Length: 208
Image (cartoon, rainbow, N blue to C red):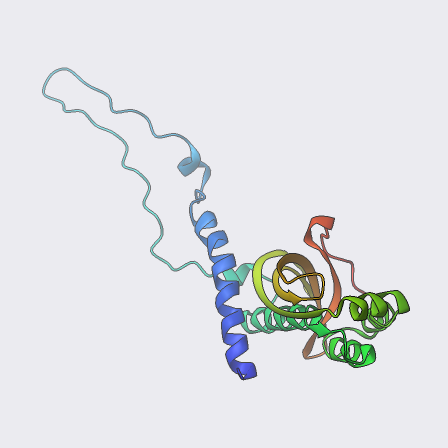
């Protein structure tokens, strides 16, 4: 079984891939209005003079530090991404013959108290439980960070892809889902504040 440190390393690598494109894009911006103006074309002069042109501006050799533009350290970002991935995998992993309360408790290990209570009511409702048991559904999920949707001082909205292997009396299937997962800072820890389908247009919530 992967250790927490290994999972955070994988999560950090995913975060770097996501934000590296931002750094590349920003380094292409001109440093000044003069650089932003189009370069004049070469001018041909008769006589002994030769064709001249203004030299192109050279890019800075200094490495671009994308983390200096974020309101948190790379370690914090990696830790939050790790929690988002692990929670999403746990969210999609359950079976019809387990105690629904046990499933809800697993999710509470990652969530805020309010979200944990909301999920517990949903997962232990009679309709949800009966549907799973009637079709003998077993779901096993893995989760992968896809993108960072929003970063604030105390919260991050990740888009996470969940791939579920589902077995059931009605037939087996592979299910791919995308969720907008809001992770909020609670002291030194990160907790799941909300989870919604990514298509719902979640832009992050005001936390207070």
